Image 1 (cartoon, helix red, strand yellow):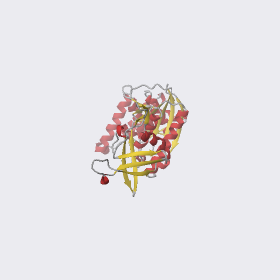
Image 2 (tube, helix red, strand yellow):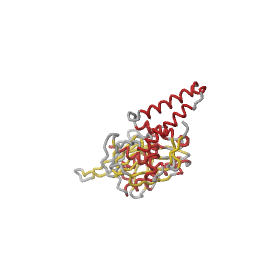
Image 3 (tube, helix red, strand yellow):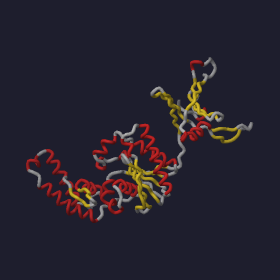
Image 4 (cartoon, one colour):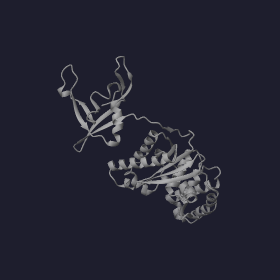
Amino acid sequence: ARGDKSKKGNLNIRLTYDDKTYQCYVEIANPLEQQEGKHAPRLRLPVSVPEKYEEEIIDLVMGEQVGVNAKGKPIMEYQPYTVEIKRKNGEYYVHLVYEEEVYGRELTYDEPIQAERIAGIDINIDRIAVSIVSKQGNFLQSKVFYCHELEYVRANKRNNIVGETVRDVYDWLMQENVGVVVIENIQLRQRHDTDKRFNRFTHHFKKKKLTDTIIRRGMRLGFRIKKVNPAYTSVIGRFKYRKKYGLSVHESAALVIGRRGLGYRERLPKELMDTIKAKVKRHLIASLGSMEESYKQSKSGKKQSQYIAMMLRKIENFKQEHEWSLWNILHKCCWLNQYQIQLKEV
C-alpha cells in the first residue's frame, strides 16, 4: 500500500501508535465486511517493533504539529510511507519504506574536499580498513574493524553484523573529527585488484549492502561521501606505503583511496621506477629470449610475446604513459617478500 501524505500513510494499510498502551498496531481495511456507502471496517493487529527503531517509527506515524487552526485545534503534518506485509515461515512481517532526513550528501567525482581530516575506507570480505589523512594527503592514523563472521553466517545475521560494524566505524570517525569519507565505487571494481580467493567469496558477501550501509549512515550523521575508482589501490598501497608507515595491505589501500578522493595522483617513487627500468626490463627481455621457438609460434606463445613486448614499450616510453600502466607492470612482474621486491614469472 503506497503512502499518501494527506491520508497519514494509506487508507488500506496504516501503522498506528497507541500512547495509552504504548503499542504499535497495523490497521488493515477489511472489504469483506464493508457496507454500501461506508468505509470498510479495519482489522487492528499489534506489531512488535525492535527497540532500536521504536522512536523513529513512532515519530513517523504520529506526525508533527505545525500550527493550530482557527478553532485552536492542532494542525498535524504527516510523512508519506509505504507499507508491505509479507508472510514468511508462517509469520507475518511489516515492511516500511519512507524517506529519511539526511544531513550529509554525496560529493561528485570532481568536487573538491574542504574538510581538514578525510577517511579512506577499504571494504573487504572479513574487515573494513580505515585510514585517516590530512587535507594535504599526509597519513595520520588507521584502524581495522574485523567482521570475520560475514564469510559464513546467514543473511539475517549478516545484515546485523554489517550494521554494527559500520556503526563502530562512524563512532571512531566522529571521535577523530573526520568530515569526509572516501569509498570505492564498486561498479568500477577492477579484476586486477582482486584475487581468486576474493572472487570465490564474492557471491556470499553482500558488498553492495555494506557499501550502501556506509553511505546511508554517513549521510544520516552529516558526513560528506565521495566515491572513487578503486583501480590499483591495493597495488599502490602495498608497494608505496606499506613499508613507509608500517601498515597492513588493507590499511595502505585505504590510505590510497583517501588520497585519491583528494585528487592526488600516485606516481611511482624513484626506487620503484629504477626497479622497473633495470630489474623488470631485464627480466622481461630474458623471459622473451628463453621462450622455445615452437612455443613462440603457438597461439598462446604469440599472445604472451605480444604482451611482454607491450610492457617493454611502456617501460621505454614511461614518461608518456599513464602511471597506472606502470603500476600494472609492477603488479604483474613483482611481489613483496618481507618488504623486499622479488621478480615472478610473467
